Length: 132
Image 1 (tube, helix red, strand yellow):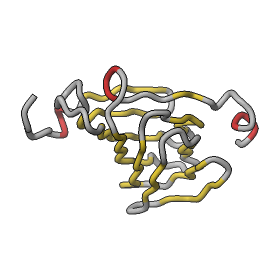
Image 2 (cartoon, one colour):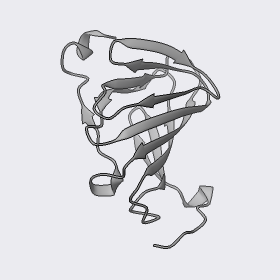
Image 3 (tube, one colour):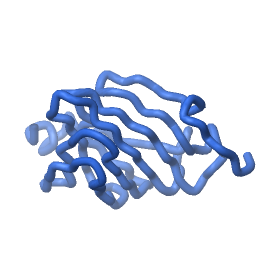
Image 4 (tube, one colour):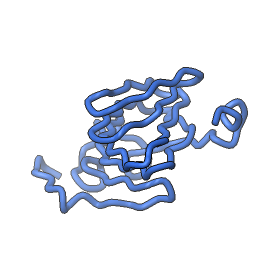
């Protein structure tokens, strides 16, 4: 695909038990193979539990709300305008402990796997299963 505008109402969104994710830029909708951009909403009290991206670096930018962001054994609370860079294969998790939705912009590079995004869930493995 060639360069193009991506309007908010064109962003295909998928719902999960923890919230939703919309693919703003990915091989499937823009043809871009160098990165993926997602609009993510974490519902109050939910999380994108501990996982990793073996082949992708990630940047998470908090647009609205607050999250507790884990990087391996380290954690910090992030609010609007805060961000975190996550190297590939680093275990991390984003937890919304508030009573308001958290809106995130997520960038992964390079685009990898079917749809441009691949995550490996480790939330059921130790030590991650005992962290929260």
